[in-house]
Image (tube, rainbow, N blue to C red):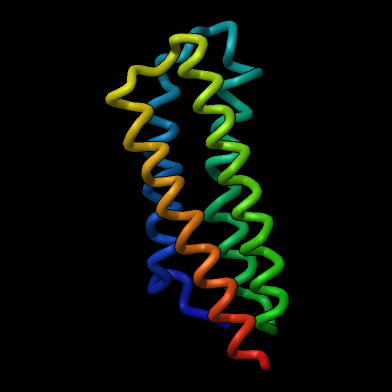
Length: 120
């Protein structure tokens, strides 16, 4: 098991989730149960799956949950781009979020490889 609060990837994912909540708070009311909710769910899923993997008993299980977290990051990326195309986000809001997602995806890939190499 890993100390969750010391994992940089989890800390950055938590920051991203908070920033996504802030970015979507002004989405139109008619999107409350659609794009807003789905975007927030995928943002929350990223640190949540990192946390679940960190609490598992093996590196292989952790890698599995990091994979799920990574999938959620791609889902979030897509939802934010859709939001941009619908003119729901300004570029000054969108670009830092997409940059954070890109950074998390790279960290996730590296972390998965490190965990895999430690089990060999």
